[in-house]
Image (cartoon, rainbow over all chains, first blue to last red):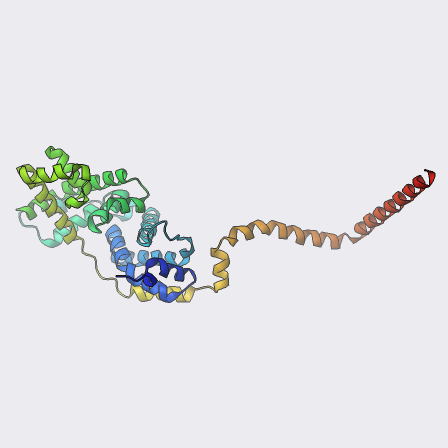
Length: 183
Length: 142
C-alpha cells in the first residue's frame, strides 16, 4: 500500500520542484513497466534502453505539464513512451524492421522454443504500429481497454477494434505454433 | 450466441470473463460452458495468450537506472531557469519582448537625434507662450 506522501501525485509535485530523490523513487516504481512496454514495441535491447532513458528524461523536463487528477501518471508515462517509440520508428523508416520470413512460421511437427519465439517476435514487429501498441498494452501488459485507449488517444471502440485485428493477424501468422501448443 | 460472435468477443476482450462487457457476459459464459465449439475456442485462446506471454520475455535493463539518474544530475539547469522556462511566464516574457525592444530602439534613436528633439521642445514652448498671450489679451478685451 502506497502512502499518500509516497503517491505518484505527491512525488510528481516534488519532481516539479526538481527533487531528484522523488524522481529516483518514481523511476524505481515505473521503469520496469515502461522498459517492458518499449522492449515489446521495438524488440531490441539497446533500443529499449535508449528509448526508456528518453522517456524518463522527458518526465523530468516536462514534469510541470503533468496535471494531477487529469490523467494517471502511469498512463501519461506510457503515452510519452508511445510517442518516443513512434517518433523513432518514423525517423528510421520501415526498412529497419524486417519483414516476416515465411520460413520461420512454416508448419513443422517439432517446433523448438527459439523458433516459436522468433516467429512471435516477427509477427508482433510486423503489426501496424497502433495495433502493436494496443496488443502490447492489453494483451501483454494486462491493461484495460479503457486505459490503453487513453494512451493511444482513441475511443474504447476503436481500441477494441485494433486489439481484435492484431489478435486475428497473430493467430493467422502463428497458427502452426498454436496448433503445436494445443496438441 | 454464435461461434463467430464468441470468437470476436475473445479477440476484443481476451479470455478473462471479468473484462467482457456486462451485456454479453452471462450469455458468453453460458456459451463457453455448454457448447463444444465455445470450449474449444476458449481453450485455444487461452493457449494463444500463454504462447504470447511465454514468447515475449523481457530482459532486465542493465545499469539503466544509474544512467538515467546521471543524465538528470549532469544536465540539471539552475532552478530559476527551470522556473522561467517551464512556467506560464514563458509566453508572457515572449509577449513583452517586442515592447522592451521598442523602448531600447526608441531610447537609442532619441540620443542620436538630439537636435530635432530640442527644436520640437522649443516650438512646443513657443506655441504655449503664444497661446497664453493670446488668451490673456482676449480676457483683457472682454
